[in-house]
Image (cartoon, rainbow, N blue to C red):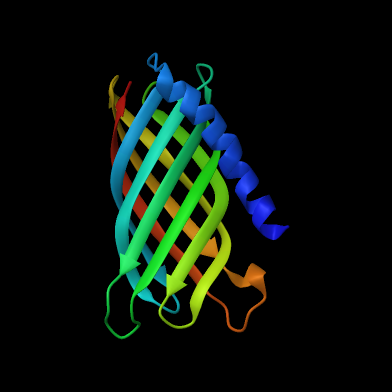
Length: 165
């Protein structure tokens, strides 16, 4: 039941993003960027973030993203963190927008294994030109909801560049 509740925001986001990508009309900003997370059990993880911000009106939209960060070897062993987040975005003016997100997250490490939890994020998008976008955001995860021994949390930031289609 928990996994179902975690995937509902993802399904809602994907159901709106897919048709929008099929007929982009200047309402979508696709961005790609760097993501970094710090875990209390796996050290620092580095990776990427892919995002889509679909505008429904002049001010409101839906921001959907997928992040994948990883750590190879070291003191903490191999680790992977994947999150799929979606949520509202609000365009304050022509140059600045805000977003908030929530959704499922998946963490795998050699030891203790695989965990499911939820992720959350917030950030802003700067539009220096009509077709270019810079995204700066915070992303965190909480894996204590699966009630296994020990807590596992991550937090980090992401920076991306996008293009309006």
